[in-house]
Length: 164
Image 1 (tube, rainbow, N blue to C red):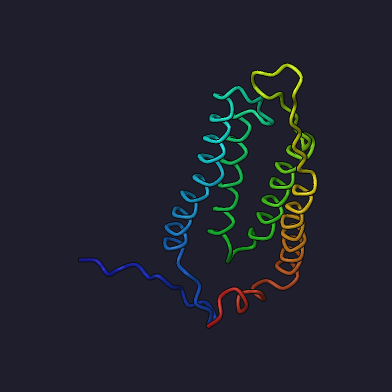
Image 2: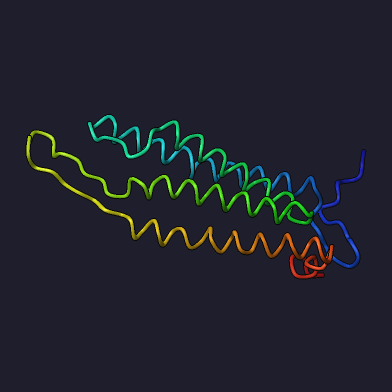
């Protein structure tokens, strides 16, 4: 019988989770993100479409964007101890900003009430999108700082990310 795989790698006094453990945890993260960023938006958009409401975003766009965001976030989690963490944080933040800006361009939504030719209802969510953009903006700044730190002093952030 073989020995069980190490869950933790001791690197210069830092207890970094092993790659196999990070991949397993990343797979669980990916499943949750796919449900939250692909399945739920697709279900809501399909429900709206089936009831005759014009969609603010094509279902295919939500599916592809949710899949890309889920994959980037999972890769970022798995590669956290490496130098790729900063660039992946930047890429994830830029993709999130692009996805939210797609909503921002169509942030005033107007639809006609079914059964009426002149009654309309308007929903504006520009302020909500602007508030949501704050989070990936901070993530972008943190990714830039992390990338610069990893290039100038490799391994310096490991004690903070993985305390002994």
